[in-house]
Amino acid sequence: MYFAKQGRKDYLDFIKNIPIQTLLFFMGSIFFYGGLTRHATTAKIAIGVLLCLMGAGAAIASSSLFVESIRINLIEPEKARAYQIYPATKSGRRARWEMFVKRRWLRKRALIEVLSVLVIIDVAFSVALTSALFSAFNALHLSARP
Image (tube, rainbow, N blue to C red):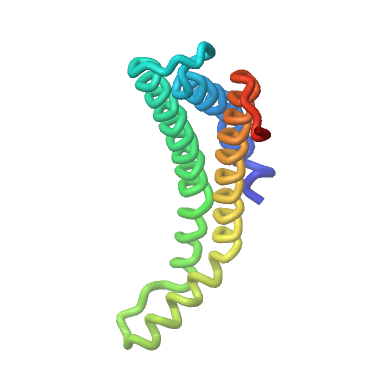
């Protein structure tokens, strides 16, 4: 598995960036609401939106670096191995389709690992955003109860 070998560093770097994203979303939520004084002004709302955009940008940048490392270290070698075993052919459509399917089937392990990476990214982003919003609600003494 990729995470047990060469992917450990990339995975840990991705996980290290989650608290920063959470902090940016938390601060953005506080400012967007109007700060701790609850007096919303245009400047506070603009700062809140800017901080939330910075958090989203950090999440996208961190995720793209993680996916890039997966592509370089896992998908490209698997693709090269599949093309080496099942080389491209100039024959008819059916033969080309069969080679295509065989190459894809050979790369199924890489596909499963990439899908697991995407699930990790989605869960991490959701946890960061949810944690930031709950922290902001607690800091602003907001509650869901009337």
